[in-house]
Structure formats: structure tokens, C-alpha cells
Image (cartoon, rainbow, N blue to C red):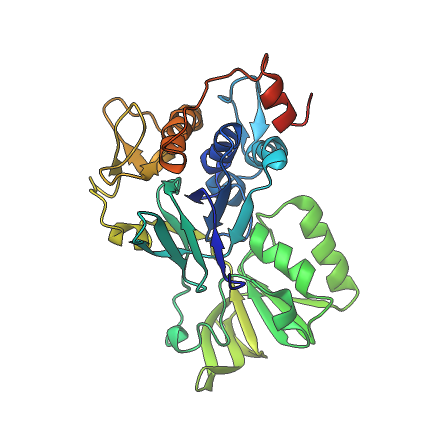
Length: 343
């Protein structure tokens, strides 16, 4: 099988808390999973939009942050060794001759599985495009909304725009390999983790980062090759920063994206499911978490965990139609405890 092709039991679209817990429930049923997420890290909305925001309604955890919850879930699913494909969007889904599903990502990766689980929250996170005239001509060649291969930026003149975690994280990580790195933000205060801001300021003091107050308003270059970024200062004046690459990190917005073209029944951009299996109108495709809808639906992480448990029981029947799944408790089953490596 080619390097960008894989076969597994279940494909999970979305690596948020519900998608991660689905890995656990599927693992208890001896089902392997590949997880696809457009973000460059696990955790979904919890980790990307409010990693430090406290959450108070997770059973057994009186309080935890979005990032802490993500870390705990990753620890919990480690025994099942899921395969993650970050920075990739689920672009197309088709049925194969043997009844399996063939998922293709926007990076050309192909994954084949008997079951697809959509755990994409409110949809795919799509980066917010800055209002710069003609920016689309540079996207993919000089303007990037995510860093997928850090080596691609070695020795480049980089401009990072933004003041959140992504902007500061990549400023810190790219500064040592860049020819020159300039961070642009409209304020001198940042929304990133204090430790990351401290690291950025240390790099600035060492001359590895140049920080400028302002916002990018224009791009100069030709044929998609960037030469300079025009920056507007708070006082209204402008100046140019020589650059080969612009990395705008202005947050994310949620769109249903290609999932809308998967042939599923939709109700106001949500996917109706039954409440016994959390299966969609298409056999073999399930939807759990905030992206689904049914009578009495509550958009809670807790609800998504419950949905993942019932989904896994139903998914087993597609992967092993000739076998019966014996329901077991982790507290008393030596088989499950060996799976979890606690026996």
C-alpha cells in the first residue's frame, strides 16, 4: 500500500474530545481507528479556542481546562495507538465495491474503512482570511494559514501576524530557523500563554524576533511570490517588511465544509441521527458530538461521550458482521484490563 494510503476499521473525522473518546470506546471493542483533523494538534475547539478556559461539567473532574481535558483523553487512548492525520481536511467520501468507505483528504491521503464517524463539532475549523487585497494569489505559495512542515520555512524571511497562541507558538518555533522573523500585532498585549509570550520577548531581546505594532494591509510581489508585506501602524502610517512568507493567525471560523457534500441528510447544517446507534441516514456513517441532532439533544461534551459509547457497539457489527460483541465492564474484565495495560 502506498505511503499516503491506509486501511483501518474506523475513520474518525475530528480530533476534539468526543472524537478522542470515540477512539477509546472503539478500542474497547478491538477496533482500530484513524483520526483526521484539519487542525495541527488534537483537542478541537477545546484546545484551539479556549485551552486555558475552565470546564466544570466533566464527570469526576470538578474543574479542568480544555487543554487538560485533551491531555487526559490522549493518555487514556494511548494503549490503542490511533493513527492521527493532523492538518488535513476530509475532502471526499465514496463507497467502494466491497461496501467500505474511501475517504480522501485535501492532502491526497486515502483511507479505507468499514465505518466512518463524523465527530467534527460544528464542522471544520477554517482559518479566518485577513482582508488583504489580492491575498488569494499568494495562498499556498507565500501565504499559509498553518505550518505543516517546519523545514519548508528554513532560511526564509517570515512575517507572522496575530496575537494568540498559534501566532506566538510559531514565532517561538520558527525564529531559530528563519533568516529573519517579524511578528506583527495590533496591540502590545497578547492572548497567548504567558510562558510563550515570555519566550517570544526573550527571542526579541536576542535579536531573533522583530516585533512591530500594526496590521498587514497589503502584499507586494508577483506570480504568487511574496517580496514584502505592507503594515499599517496604529497612527495610520504604513511601512513595508521584506518577506518571503506571511503566516496570518487571526483565529478560526467553523464551516461544515466538504462534509456537506458527503450525501448525508442535513438539518440546518446538522446531521440527524437515531438515538440507539447515533447512525446517520447512510448505513455505516455515524455522527457524534455537536455536529449531530436528535430530539432532546444537548450540546455537551458529556452527551458526546455517551453517543460515542453507543456508536462503538453499532460500529462493531459493520466491521465484524459474523461476530457477536460481548459487553464487558472495565472494572471486572481481565481482557479489557489487558487491553488498557492495567492488568
